[in-house]
Image (tube, rainbow, N blue to C red; front, side, top):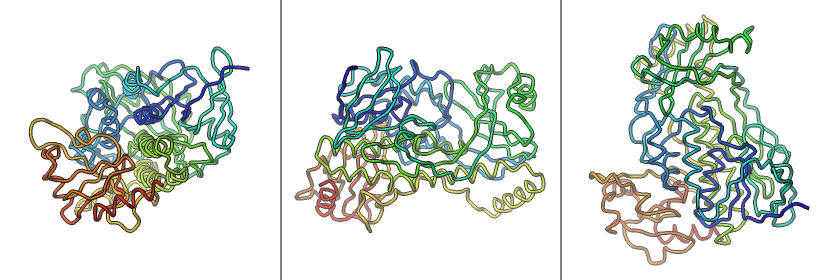
Length: 492
């Protein structure tokens, strides 16, 4: 019989979602084991973008500054006709968003994964094992027993919960017998990643070229890299598209020969799918194991980090503070509609770009140009509210994202660094009995809030208090003591 290990949570998959979830759990005192079948971080680029909310989660781990140093910004995201006319524009991506960081951050995923793993070194309650492959699991009462294959033989891991953060083909999801809901988006694209030698010869903003002759994506990446994506059309083959001479022909109109070196070429099938069940007993799914999105909204990795932030505080409340197991039932009810909203946005963008029929493209262009001339805004890319769950039903702002003010002076301090992790109750005046359940109560006259007082006062202009969950979504607004009581009731 092989070795037997015990932990509170076993996470299968050491990508950004799995490691972030593990770090958040360990930070709360949850004994966490993360395993991954690979020996090393996957060395080539994958995800291209993270948003201000994702950066805020990394901030809570003390890693945001290091990650930000690897990112690049695009002022806008333009959808152009084949003739170069602007059909739709998403502005202000280089501006500070509600999370206290730039709205859009173009990334090099291997660099981010390295920073996350470096941040895990010497952290208590966190362990990472490479070349450990999940095989199967059984559930017995309050325990999950997983069989894991390792270079030294089979290991049994006993945990209170098992998390499948193991990607689109998730063995954990397969073992749990969870099916996917196919949202009917299926397109093949060639993805080209390049190392840049001459920035001045490459575009400085993100582009979708809605040309029926060849729908094309051109976006910045982090760490001196750039990406192009070209849609395959009927009758075209993967072998044809992966030929270097063919790729050179696709890139010729961009006039970038000598300005970059090809790093990767791969055919991707863009899908939109959501797991029908995100929880089965003591097994939960996160990241691509739970949902797949086309890349056009840049929200794939962001969705996984939102999963991690949502799951982490709930698991910690159950394991460390005796909250009821039913709290995990709110994971899917909150996150599923939220994730689907972003997937629908990505599908709308993709269907706008992917029109290959010239007449249909001409009609699309005319409609979008007329709407733009009339002043119609681009579709909202703001985070929707959470679905129903651990929020105060019928309370204003329940499920909305709570903004992170930054200081008005030169100190560049942010609210989260001042108030720390956990849930907050921010009120106009001190409350009589607002503590308990890891809830920090602070009133606007507290000196620690001085750098943020104006922004918080403005937000609370018509409310006595707001209760902000650990994942920085709003539980509810109202009278401080009533909010604290309602919060305790949800966690008992």
